[in-house]
Structure formats: structure tokens, C-alpha cells
Image 1 (tube, chains in turn cyan, green):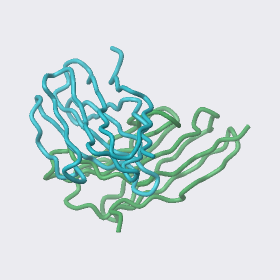
Image 2 (image 1 turned 180 degrees about the vertical axis):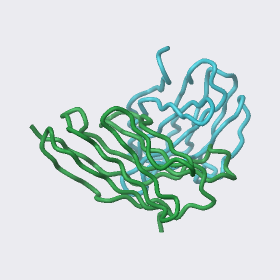
Image 3 (image 1 turned 30 degrees about the horizontal axis):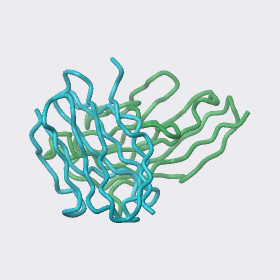
Length: 111
Length: 114
């Protein structure tokens, strides 16, 4: 298995633009998590899904952030409009049982 | 205040030496504690996971300990290698979160020099 796949790996955009991050989880895993990592705050859970259904989105910072999981093999995290404070590394992780397996991350820079 | 505190923030050791990283947590009710290794530019990878009843667990040259009474954990690395250079993150979960919402420390950045 290729593991969790994220795209793009790097994204540079201007303030106000829409950003869409993509994730393909490991086949057979029933949980999917979106995290954000910054130096100051470390890893923060934004939202997680179970069997494609959003379970907890209490970590989503504000309405500018939205996430979808239309099927078991694909999820998106969208930021609209983006702001410089959204600059961070965004990780997707898929889970089975108690383990979580992380993708390589998307480094987002908003100028 | 962060519910998971790690020390030291960073550490430099020579190849072949041992080191111990510390983690203190206030998360309650406790379910399990994990240590993750994160290489630069990559996602975290799980090293160990311990429940309340386990006080030590090993994964190769990595040995984690847990004292649930004092809410402390340590990660000991034996005979360090250059490839051990990474950030090591202590992570705790609460029993009511069904082990899904993990509470992450800020990590200890370890550099192993030749």
C-alpha cells in the first residue's frame, strides 16, 4: 500500500484566495483525520470522519474552513478565503483501530 | 496551559550515546499514551502506545515508560544513530474520546551528531 497520499505537497497562495487540500486515505481504514501543525501550537486536530461521516469538527478554526469526504477514498480540506495566519503544515491521517497513519503533509504559505 | 508538556525542548547528542526524553501530562480521564517520531518534512510515525496498566514498552532501541500515578512518561533511546535525528512527540488520549482525539505535546527535537 502506498500509504496516505496528500496533494499538493506545497502550496503558495495570496491572501483571499481559495485553497483546496486533498487526501487519499489507506484503503480499508474507516477513520480520516485532518490536522494542522505550527511551531507555536504543535499538531491540532481540525476534524475527523468515521465511515465518511464527519464526527467532530470542533477544531475547525472558523467558517472559512470546510472539509468533505464524498467517498471512502477521498477527502478535501478547503480554506476560503485564505489568510496569512493559515500558513502551516496540514496533515491528513487515516485510522484503523487506535492507530493513526499520517500522510506527508501539505505545506501551505499564504502571503 | 498545554495538557502535555515535554522536556527538553531540544537535545544534541553524539552518535552511539543514550538519551531520555520526558513527558508530563494532566489529561484526564487517561486512556493511553503514545510516542511518535517525526522526521523533518514528514508525518509523525507511531513508536509505542501504552495503556494505564502498562508501565514499559519497547520498540527496538526505543523504550517508553509510563507512571500513571505521577502522570509522567519517558522515552529512552539506546545507542543512538544518525537516523534518530527527529522530533519526538508525546501524545495522550482521553477515555471519553474513544482514542480518536489525541492531545499532542510540542515535541523534543533531537539531533544526533557523528
